[in-house]
Length: 491
Ligand SMILES: *Cc1c(COP(=O)(O)O)cnc(C)c1O
Image (cartoon, rainbow, N blue to C red; front, side, top):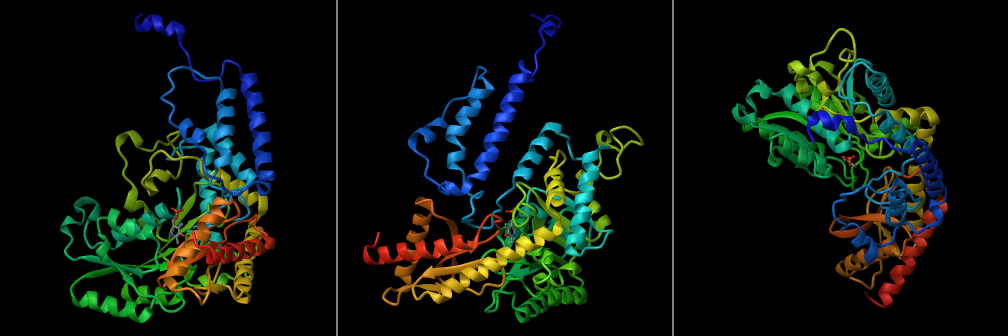
């Protein structure tokens, strides 16, 4: 059969039976809404049995399979073994919980399936609007620029790329760092997120160029040490170009003194980047706003919608004060991407000029619909609610002789452990790790963990709109139960 013959038998990927697909779609929506509605009634997590592990070793499909039967396989093997972050007692790492309308929005976005890299279509206007709303939320000027990205890691990389390029005293895009006359160095605290370390590596600056300074007892950057480090670097002929301020550190949710950092940046001519992956959103609560005061003076801000705005994965945002610097860091327009005056190839803003991705998904829709569904005031109340819950949990921990708080609670993260004066720190580390694994395995709750001053901490980070006060009562009860049992009969 040659090409001309074959086109008489063209095929495509649309269903043969549209009504059947429609029915399946309705069923999926029904069952997924019930899945979310009843999430509290199921264990938060369970280990995957052998047959599920085996299921994912099936070979590459060669022949078609009916959509209903694919969906049945999904139902059996995937939702029961979810990570658990849709559950009210998930407080591990910093992970968002999603919403039903957010999920539906992702369906709409995938159905329309525009490429958000550029062009003249409604999706691009919507992303522009979401970025404008983001500036308003965080007190950034109207003229500032922005981009929706996969998350905080990418938002930090975008902000720091603009910082590096804008501050380089040579044509860095042309020459790269190979020809840098001075070593470019930048600063943050040693509590800064790993994504900033990765950014230092990816930007060719190297990990060593990111000076990680000590913190005070509140886990905020030590400003004297910072000033000293800048002086030392200048004396050595290095070129300081940026400070990364942390708004909500990942270990304890500490926020650096952002106004003081902004002052230093102004005085020294440094770029001020704020990693506010979750903490930046404290700006939405009238009571918490003062914690992030000074953030509005930043040159760039990274924050996430998928953490403390509870929007389904993935979506974060980079804001950059200087639109031209943002454009200059990323825009590269070959002939096949040149903008036209009219038609699809027109459009005022092509987001591919502001980031690394050319092809981009319609992330804006789930954010846009969520913000409209609830209004920004409700987000402020929920963020406050999560912080109030953290303080409630901390108060329970303080009241219990068998528990110990390991760090201050400035925002929404509580680090604590089961404690007993009969056990060494080393024994307590082992015991608390065992408590954590059992909390997960028994499907009770999912906190995560960190090390605070060499002590293993059970770490509860609350970015969950479904949590209720009684969930924290239960956590405390269960940690004490497991701790006592393990102390009597070690694992
Ligand atoms: C989560 C987090 C990041 C990374 O964000 P992702 O959305 O996971 O890529 C960066 N900084 C802080 C403080 C975070 O908590």
